[in-house]
Length: 308
Image (cartoon, rainbow, N blue to C red; front, top):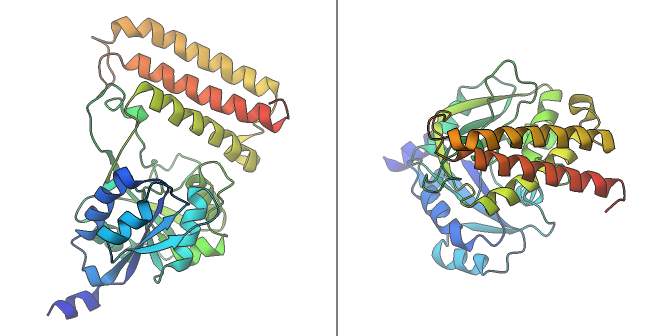
């Protein structure tokens, strides 16, 4: 009976990049192994990006059914491309090594893809925070989240790679992930949309994502976002405009300082004035996010002009 049930479900591949992920990948792999989806109908591929913390050896020992793929070129986009190339299925599910998947995760994404229109290239699931303990973790705008895919007013439609299922045929048609692009999942979504494909959202497919815990981690995280925002805009100037030049940096600095000034004023009032779900002291977190984003953007902008 079990064999019959498994044969009725499509075979899918789960791909996760890995770089020195020994601390978190065990929880991720355990959650994927424990899926309600028939185990014989999915494979797990870890695309290692040159880990030096013993991740590969540890995975081989504790998760012998997981396929290890070597991704020689650095970057999560290159790792995903290596995993996609080695996968044995048309539908490929993406997750990050610092996530934990809910038991119905694979089943929900597969069901959504089965019922999706023909030109659907990707479906993203709900990304919730892994925990809510520190000031930073409890501020919703600091979370890694799925974009508002179903919002008809947004001009950039994509699925976030910590929780998404892709049609391999569509991804290969547009050239896969571009690891040189900032926010390679956003870039892929833009190219898929340009090629006539669509993206969708499935709230029942849930993963928990580990977000920055401290203010320093948040600053570093947003610094990288600032760099990636610049690189993405540089590649897609027709959508975002030209990101280069002193005038752009000056404008962003003015907007950033204005935001931080407002945060300073709001800080003593944050006991009484708090956006939904935000903790006391949230303006401090918001100010760190703003400054990190500006610093990353300005640095890569100056570097592109040969000034760094």
